[in-house]
Length: 216
Image 1 (cartoon, rainbow, N blue to C red):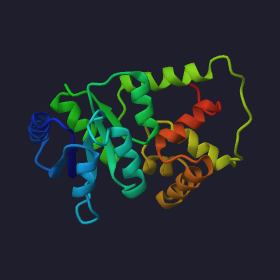
Image 2 (image 1 turned 90 degrees about the horizontal axis):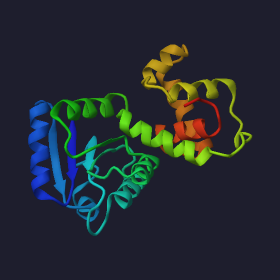
Image 3 (image 1 turned 120 degrees about the vertical axis):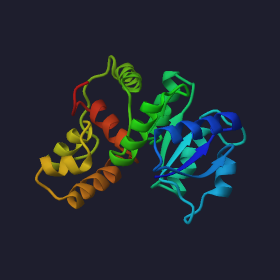
Image 4 (image 1 turned 135 degrees about the vertical axis):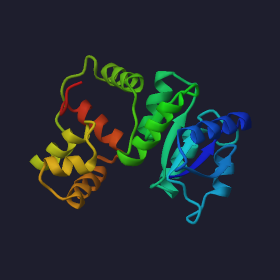
C-alpha cells in the first residue's frame, strides 16, 4: 500500500511513520510534505499514493484547499485525515469534500491499521464518533423542514443501490446482494455521482438522508 504524509509538524510525521511501521510491513511511504503546496511539488502520476494521511491546519495551503486540489487533479487518491480537530463543522466540511476517513492524532496502532485497510478495501473508514457528528449536523439542517420532493428522478434500481450505499457494505457486496456484476454497480455509482452532483460515497449518503430515502 503506497502512502504519503502531509503535515507541517516534522516530528509528528516521523511519529506517524513509526506508528505505520508498527502496524505492518506492507506499507510504503512514497513521500512526506509540509502542506498542500509542498505536496503539489512531490506528487505525480508516476509517484501517486493510494492513500494520503493529511492534517487540516497547515500553512500556505490547508487541508480543505489541498483536498479540493486533489479532487480536481488526482481523484483516485484517497485522503485519510489525521488531526486533533474535533469541531463538528470542520469534520463535516472535510467529509463533504470527499475524504475517506477521520482519525485523531492520538490514534492507537490497531485503529490505524484498521483505518488503512478499510479505506483501501471498502473505500472509507468512519468511527462512531465521526458518524455521530455527521448525523447531528444533518439532523440540525433538517430540523423544522418538511420533506421535499426529490430534486432528481431515480429509478427503482438506482434507489435500491443508493440505500445500500448508505450501509457498511462494500461495492462488491452490494453487487452480490443486487445480483449484479461489480461493473454494473460501478455504473450505478458513476451515474448517481453525475445525477446528484456528488463526488463520494459520503455525498450519496448525505443526499439519501436529506431526502428521506434512509432513516438515521
